[in-house]
Each structure stands twice: as structure tokens, then as C-alpha cells.
Image (cartoon, rainbow, N blue to C red; front, side, top):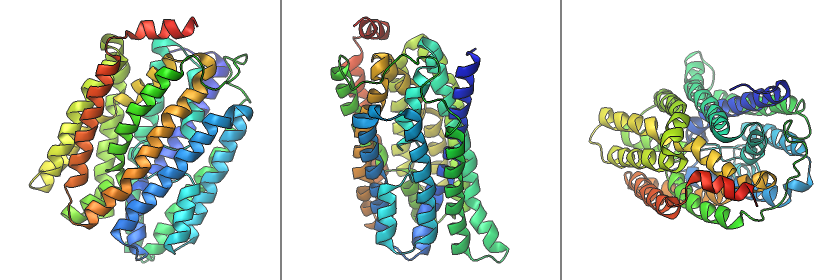
Length: 408
């Protein structure tokens, strides 16, 4: 995929930014429950803090969708980077639960395996202007692949506090240092985004607008995506790490190694997503790779031992992320260019809101000793979402969706 020089520079900056954020998100998802437990907080509080994080991200994303078109896109990215730096400093410097909960709500912390932060719609909107058709799907695949690979490396970095503890450094101090690293990445992102042009390079003439002719389609997609997100919130990475701690007694370093493997498989699978979407369509790629991954998750919850559970989680990861670039490309394809920023926000907001409701429930189930329940519920709900999505859009060819919208 060859892009004009100016577009290529912008895309490169956005991919680097995605990689940096994914790296720190990768280790934060593993270390967050370990950090809270080390501070003396309870298991259920891990779920509550995850809920606050996702709820705050949802409200911030909603604000971007509703009013963000009044502000310069680069300004919003710079503000998000500063907020990320402040979030890391808050977690590194605070110990009491309620101040941490407040920082989680207003900050950018991401306890999940995907990107649910306010950065997502802002970066998606700019990327969507860089290419069209199959090229756009491949570009979103590169974006998702970059995130998955860097998240895998970040999961490996979760072993750093244990390694430092073996060298005589206080483990809690080492954990705080990892959050300082998170703050440092926020500062790096500010420097990176400061070099971006005010508007996307390719389509300077496109003025962002609120949702208009595509509203019905976007609302239907957003409602369905919210079911998927609620299910995913039951087993965000921080809760999945907690499940592995409680069920099998694994250390953060061991969980980080497992998450490295799952993230790596997810990254590799995304390379096949554009190829598959070109042959069977975006919708079919989203649905028919997602259903088997949910079945593997259910079986992992019921696995009698660690080796089988790990194997099933790895199989799940080989399929579960193939819908990520195809979903993003599908949303961008069914709206007009001027609506893309609003569509990205309004499909992300219900996902974030729905995902914000379930971690508290998942944490409560784990605290009550019902260890398999969050994983089984997640798998069943995701299968229901996939079937509903396929039924709702299977009779509407994707090439007709795109042409109908673009000719309005």
C-alpha cells in the first residue's frame, strides 16, 4: 500500500502513538490487580476501578463525538496525551482507593485487551481519510496489528517489578515505577502529536459534522456493539489476570508471559483479516471468526487444569481479534466522510459504556468464588451478539452499503 509522502508521515505518527500506548496498556492490565492487592485493596475493588476507568473513557468519547467537531483534531489528541501523563502520575503517587478511583474515572487507564480510550475515535477519524476501500481495511489492520504486537511486548514487561524485587528493590516501589513509565509515554505522545498537521492530510476540505444521513445505521451498529462490549467487560485483561491469580495461583510474570502469547497470536491473526475480508466480506469475517473464539473461552472456564486452560485461551486469541480491523473499516465504510469522526465516537461510546458496567459484576463474581461464571457469561453473550449482527446486516451487501452512503 503506497501512500503520498504527507499522508505516510501522518499514518506513521499515528501508528507509533498506537504502539506506545499499547505497550504501557499491556503491562498495566496485568499489574493493575497486583498493584491494588499490594496496596491492601479487596478483589471486588479491582472490578469497581475497572468500571470507573471504562465509564470515564466512555463519557470522554461521548464528549468528543458530540462537541469534538468544534475543536481542532490535533488539539484533542494533545489534550488526551496530557491526560494520560497525569493519569500515570496519579496512580504512581496515590495509595487510598477513592482517590485512585477518581483518577481512574477521569484518566486514560485501560484495563482491557483492546483500545477503549478517547484516543481511539480521534485516531480512527484521521486514519479513515488516508485510504479508501480495501486499502483502508489494510490500514486499520496495520493499526490493530501494531497495537497487538506492542501490547504483547508490554505484557512481558509485567515481569519487571518481580525482577527488580529479586534485586532488593521494594516491590511496591517497583510497581509505582511502572505507572511513572505510563506517565512518561503520555509525555512522549504529546511531543509526537504536536508534529501532526491540524487536519488530516488527504482530505483537508472535509469538515467534520455530526451524524446525519447515516444515523440509523450507526445507531443499530452501536446497539449491537454494546452487547459485545458488555460481554468483554466481564473478562477485561485485569480481571482475566485476577482469574488466573485466583484459579491457578500464577504470578504476574507468568500471567504476563501468557498475555504475551495471546497478544502475539491476536496480532498474527489480524494479518489475515484483510485477506479474508476481501474474499468473504467484512461482516462474515467479523462473525465467523468471533463465534469459535467465544466457544474456546467457555471451554477454558471449565477446563480441569492449567495446561488445557492455557491452550484454549491461546486458541481463542488466534481468532478473537480478527474482527477488530474489519469492524473499524466497516463503520468507516457505511458513513459519509464528514460523519466519520462522529461515527467513530458514537460506535465507541456505547461500547465503552456497556463495557464499564460489567467489570464490577465480573469482580463480584470472582470475589464470591464463582470463578467460571464471568468467562462463561462472556462467551455466551458474545455468541448472541455475533448471531444478531449477522442477521441484521447479512442481506445488505457491503458494496451497496458504501455506494448508497457515498451518493447521498
